[in-house]
Length: 351
Ligand code: CP3
Image 1 (cartoon, helix red, strand yellow):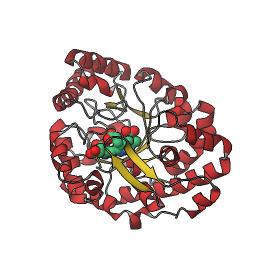
Image 2 (image 1 turned 120 degrees about the horizontal axis):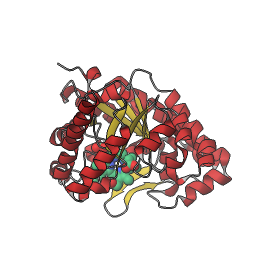
Image 3 (image 1 turned 30 degrees about the horizontal axis):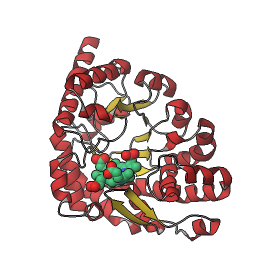
Image 4 (image 1 turned 60 degrees about the vertical axis):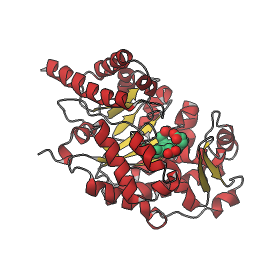
């Protein structure tokens, strides 16, 4: 029997040869799935995230339905903001809303040093429960938001298209900025290490909004904070460092750390891998919208990505960003099958 350590996903994280390309999808558990909507018709999103048994059920069911090579912990990026004293609300219309203002250094100083093991025991329980019921050979991925993306949610009070408040703070109040990102970063480091201790087989750091910055600003104001999180992680499991819109500064993004770099669809996978360097694994990068279109189009783009990966060890197939809520579940199942089938043929032809 294949052990979890010998799974295609963990082998690819370590850049070992695999007979086919492993695949999982960001947001593989979510609203596009009937089983998820059934649970959500009875319980709010926040209650669901704080119920470890249900989190395990959602993560495991989603993985089984689509046949992905890894499961991801069911939780949310923003939950860690609550113990800092920010009220969090998931509105169906507005998306997440974060209440509480950061305007001065005093506001940052008033934020507590968060010890997630004490204030968010439900997350670590969810990791343990999921690991307990998940098939032993299937890896479980834990995750957290990167300091920049979390700080941006705090400063904007929710989602944003322009990130004006975030950029203004970064450019005009560098001391406040650094103390805010450092404080969040310390909590994120402990949060991910806690997930590793609880049984996560890999962890992913999401810097979903890093691409709104200029390359030099990323380097000066963000990289040191991501780097300090990534350097502070236990070396026992692989780390995936994901960002969107990072195509213009992939070398710098990679410098922040990570065994695997997650890229979105705005950069060609072959170009991205060349930039990042072949001593690092890569994850990506199908446009999630292709899952809402024709089977032929999807197949064409999957082939392109697999060709670009060139059967080099260390490619994990994923989307460029999360599964969209309007996605037909049968297309997701078809995608996973297609990646398995086409990549097995590519690797076969290689011999
Ligand atoms: O399968 C999985 O990936 C499950 C776990 C997961 C969720 N959110 C569940 C969720 C993960 C890994 C996330 C990450 C996350 N959350 C990110 C990073 C990835 C990305 O998309 O960039 C971000 C930025 C968030 C913050 C967040 N949470 C937003 C912006 C939203 C609202 C928009 C949306 O897509 O619904 C959420 C809510 C959320 N997180 C849902 C789920 C399943 C939907 C909640 C519902 O049931 O209504």
